Image (cartoon, rainbow, N blue to C red; front, top):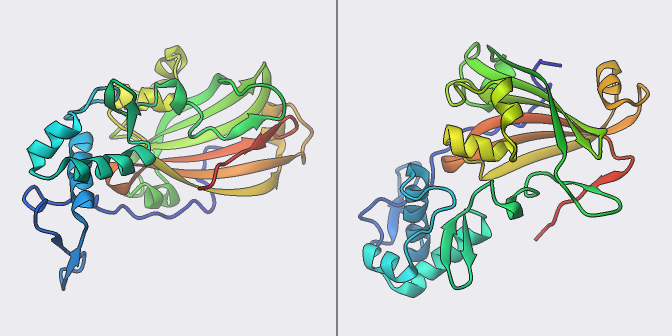
Length: 273
């Protein structure tokens, strides 16, 4: 199962929408075509500047960012403008407000973040972290399809991961992941196995790559012989197939993932708002 998904989501890499350092008081930024100006509200320009600082690593995951008063002085805007920018960043899970403590850079190592990307929930009981068994971790050459999604060249090095996730000892999710080899140098089966937190926490803390959003396609499939063997179900058992493309800052795709979910005692839950 180490081939690319047959029809992965195709998301081109787009430049991050950020205002220039001198545009916070302007109100007009060039359009992508360069043919005419587009007007961006001031708070969105401040949001873009703060996002630039997050992307550059000025404030690391889990760190306290400057207060609204300090940011207002830094960008020479009102505190209300900064507050509105941070409201949007918090809604997008890029920062976390903590009452009486301030605003912190969001981190995948926080307990609240564990289920942001894991949507399989038990039909009964409280959601909890699954166990992991890494079946394969190796560097291979990117197929044309994987290269297209991850904005690589066909044949570029990628890290391929195949793992089995269990809940209360029962095999439940069979996953395959494709990651850019340049970004994830040194990612080995040993490192994955010894890391006790969520995989995205490892990507964030040791490889400087933070997943900030994902796009998924979900369809029903029948378990083939390989999936049936790993999930310990008869061949042909209905499964959910979830194809995910995950993005970091600047809307850059940095992970392609396919999961086969057994839903005998679980369901896929997503909150829409």
